[in-house]
Figure 1 (cartoon, rainbow, N blue to C red):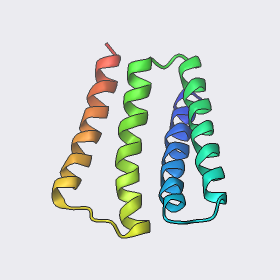
Figure 2 (figure 1 turned 180 degrees about the vertical axis):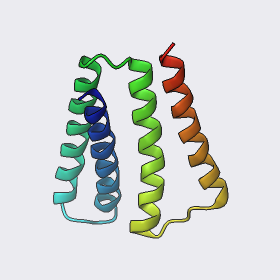
Figure 3 (figure 1 turned 90 degrees about the vertical axis):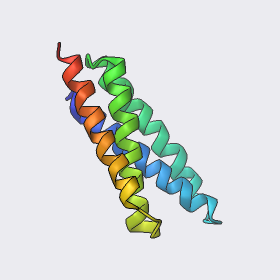
Figure 4 (figure 1 turned 180 degrees about the horizontal axis):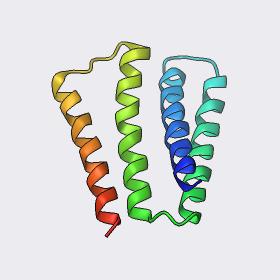
Length: 107
């Protein structure tokens, strides 16, 4: 369940960040509710993942890095923001970095 909690934390954080984008563009106040609820849920799930025994460095590294990568891809799809080859390379490096962190934590 620890990994499920961490995945939920990443998804809620990304949803909150995308909602923040909508709220900042003159969206209704309902988007601000989505922002607050999304970040609150993300922190609750991150806390549950930590409580389940996941190391802080691993959990936070995966949470933050995955959120950045997912937000970049989602903003391309939803908001037609640029996603250049250099940015794609950065996302690839994030994925490799997350894997290295996980492998390092196993020792």
